Amino acid sequence: MAIAHTQTLDYPIHQVLNPQGELLGSLSSTLQQTEFWLKAYTHLWRTRLFDQRAIALQRTGQLGTYASCLGQEAISAAIGFSLQQNDVFIPYYRDQAAQLLRGTQMRSILQFWGGDEWGSFDAPDYDFPACIPIATQITHAAGVATALKLKHQAQAALSTCGDGASSRGDFYEALNLAGVWHLPLVVVINNNQWAISVPLSQQTACETLAQKAIAAGILGVRVDGNDFFAMMMVLDEALERARSSKGATLIEAVTYRLCDHTTADDMSRYANAKEKEQAQHLEPLIRFRKLLEQQMRWTNEQQHTLEQELRQEIELEVQAYLSLEPVNPDDMFNYLYSELPKDLAQQRGV
Ligand SMILES: Cc1ncc(C[n+]2csc(CCOP(=O)(O)OP(=O)(O)O)c2C)c(N)n1
Ligand SMILES: [Mg+2]
Image 1 (cartoon, protein in one colour):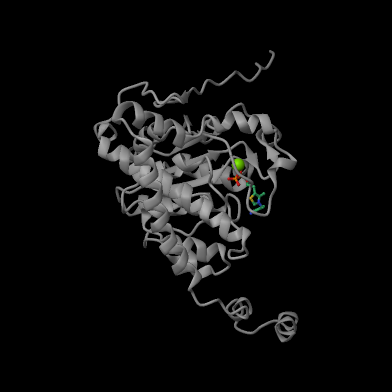
Image 2 (cartoon, rainbow, N blue to C red):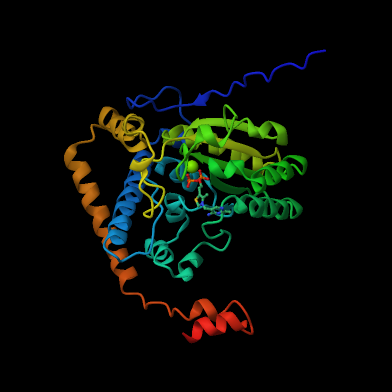
């Protein structure tokens, strides 16, 4: 008997708002409200302008390093808007949009990237700091989801990671546990097509990342990560499944990293400029603006005012960050050991 070839797995990409700014399907009652559109659009721009400002701070020597979320804002903003207050958010480092919605201040995000770990601790009680080690946060999230399940609480744990992270053992182990223990967990992959300079095609032979859910026995979904509305709809459903004990969901949000990996990278050395240029046309803020122009007669003047107000809001936070007391470099030796090993004691002595 011949073993059948792997079949093609059909995971359509859910889309509600197309790149022309047209709504393709009906929206839930919350998503229909134009006040909500404005709130969401404002937040997407808040995130983008904050991101730009953070890069400018880094380029002028006022921030250590920074991981931009340019082009990927809709994924994280939708997460922030769809989580309930007592859900647990276990983010990674491109989740500025959701973190801000959860209550983290811009000054704290800057403080963290400025090299001061205290910036990580400005999150609501339930949430975790943004995780830098790749994929370890998914195992933590499975642990959180286990605790929520044992306590019989109608809460969900939601964690995020990149496409590269989905090749790590931690990712598969966490998903496996989520399946076998039927955990209230949602994992969102920000598939931005790159893991630093490694393109997705060199990362995995899987046709989609959503299909990685199959082996874990959980639900997998693929969604246009540049479509804020589709993201909201998929997330609402996945979170509701988690909260009502219906099991875990893996969401692959398809997008493109329109920025360098971090400020320590230069993607022009490895990325195809044409591919990036094409991705530019699909990014989330352009299509949202088209929707507002078509449905709400959004004007250039309104856009200008919005950006000006946001810039003022951001500047206050930047000034608050810049006036923080610098950290004591000795702190990196001070809190790891009760008694400092010899070699570290020597280093501190220098
Ligand atoms: C455990 C671990 N290994 C390696 C690294 C170095 N590293 C930082 S980001 C990154 C690529 C991650 O790519 P992806 O998961 O696609 O996320 P993206 O940065 O594209 O959002 C790597 C390998 C790390 N931070 N942690
Ligand atoms: Mg990536």
